[in-house]
Amino acid sequence: MADNWEPVVGIVGGSGLYHIDGLTEQVWRPVHSPWGMPSDELLFGRLDGVKCVFLPRHGRGHRLSPTNLNYRANIDALKRAGVTDLLSMSAVGSLREELPPGHFVIVDQFIDRSFAREKSFFGDGVVAHVSMADPVCARLGDALQAAADGIGLPITRRGTYLVMEGPQFSTRAESELYRSWGCSVIGMTNMPEAKLAREAEICYATVAMVTDYDCWHTEHDDVTVDVVTRVLADNAEKARALVRAVVPALAARREVCGAGCDRALDTAIITARSMRSPVLMSKLGAVAGRVL
Ligand SMILES: CSC[C@H]1O[C@H](OP(=O)(O)O)[C@H](O)[C@@H]1O
Ligand SMILES: Nc1ncnc2[nH]cnc12
Image (cartoon, rainbow, N blue to C red; front, side):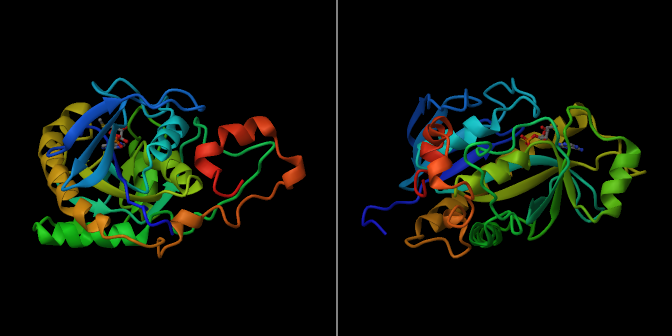
């Protein structure tokens, strides 16, 4: 590993989290991507001396819907910005009684039911298949757990996040179906974000912040934006505290990721070198340059 290797922590802020506290040397800068326009400029800065890059997932002012987010441009831009460790901060509905609004979950699995999104950097001309068996980085998950414990923030270590297409919320039958599948929380954005982070060899972890009980719970109102908004501000405060607590711990990383996220492409590309598309190869420079 190069002597000057330095972790860079990326934070994707979801609904309600449009900035983070305590960033020094702050500057918003556009990052251009061959995959199109990211959701917004990226906010560069330092937290306790650690390089950080923040991206509001839906753009400042929440302009972009989950379906229309350019997930590839977002991840490519974060990779270009040098991000090694990415924290996805996401509002979710709860599918379990024991995960009430205000509670946080460190997600460890996903079921991807999104269907109207570009899900890979690869394709005809450069075909690749990365493993998604363990879709989040266990090292980041451990660090988030320790940081949450350190600030007395109750957090659940494991859970499955069901990704729906949206933008409408689920029907009651869908909500009950996902509960019967054992899912813990539901949201609209973490896929293909997690898949693309894996393809880009960025360590990724999700902090799912519960805002509502979706529509299955007989003793709670069905989810609406109003219901969600009532909890968002509180959750955002806790999320900022968690980010501040975890970032210094991530700075201690001085070696390759034990979970292997940063080498995901070692065994993924199947297209013969002589047959690879020069056009796609040039777009893949930031994401896959290490192995191309
Ligand atoms: C405003 S409720 C629905 C909205 O909130 C979540 O967004 P994010 O994951 O970016 O926090 C959910 O996925 C929906 O996009
Ligand atoms: N119930 C819900 N369904 C989908 N996305 C959400 N984001 C917050 N609450 C949600």
